[in-house]
Image (cartoon, rainbow, N blue to C red; front, side, top):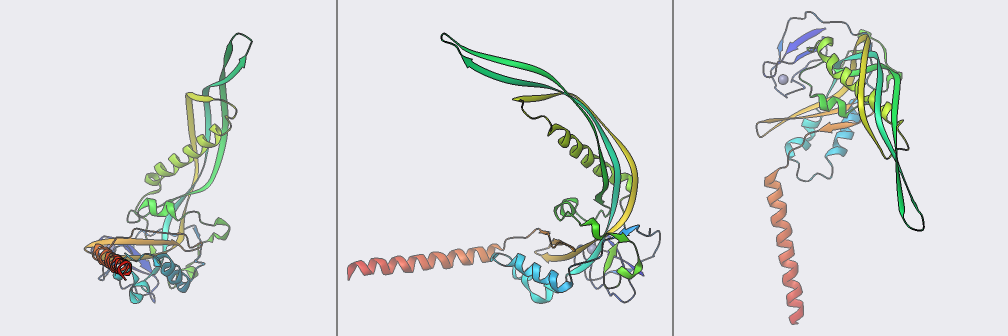
Length: 289
Ligand SMILES: [Zn+2]
């Protein structure tokens, strides 16, 4: 295994000795320098790549199709082929959340007598208590990877997760975690609490309104695992900015920020206007003959 560091963005990339990494998967920088291989934790689990590089290229092309305002730098065949398979480091959290909430619920009935309309409002004290158990809630452990990107390409199919083995590495890059499991736990815990709270409040059916009056949500963390999850990545530099594209290496679900080429926009605008003027001209001429 070899380690490299990107002098531009600081990413630490690991690969096997035969996988040459010529550019940084995060920022596209072309000079990455050999680095100390130190303090790397061996992952507990890995989800192997299921989409090949050809699959990824094909899906990326489909993604770009029908986007005429995308700058050519993105669609260039040579550039698309630079797409890299990378194992992104993740912490996976097990835990349980106990919810003990109270709500004020109301039910409203209206009925009509011969002389008046009667509205009855019933008030309820609703108590909801329960425990939700979570297994392997993921949070990416790379500060270089935008969190919202990794959230967007979820879910990963855990049935394909297996014990880590170096034999899954050749041909792919891996990123070293630089966010500790304690730091990342904040995100994972928030997620578990929100999910548990939502699940509990979904049992409040049949009430016109249910206003929370007491919320007691306690989380009990259990265990943390370290895992490599498969992501196809492509970084494109355009107009001095980096644009990152990421694709779930299992499902092909993708996300990317794409710029609009205003030069192209103006060109199309002019062409379409011109076509309109010509058409109008012929219509008017047609009227005269
Ligand atoms: Zn970089």
